[in-house]
Image 1: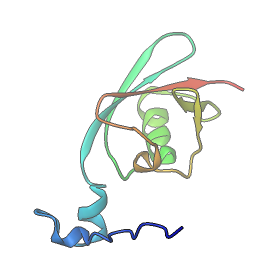
Image 2: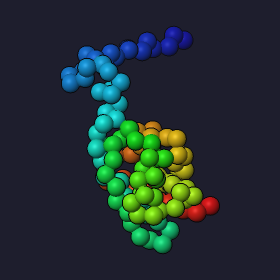
Image 3: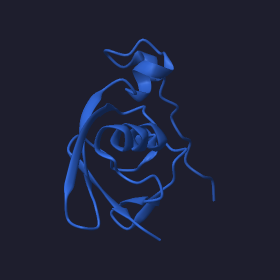
Length: 102
């Protein structure tokens, strides 16, 4: 049985994209993120989709004293420090992360 042929789509052909990595990934889009701490308090931070979890943690640590040791989760999935927000499946504006001690 022959497999169906896949059509390769050139994203640069789509309207509004210039073919660059930044344009394709939209890593400079700004979004608001809410971080819920174990005590139920909430911290909000405005960042870009391309920022790493490490950078967002640093900002919250410097600004609000949030502990570095906390592990962050999106839903039930652990979000490690080296990832960017863009790497988290389904991450959108007004997304919620949960910070927990482990």
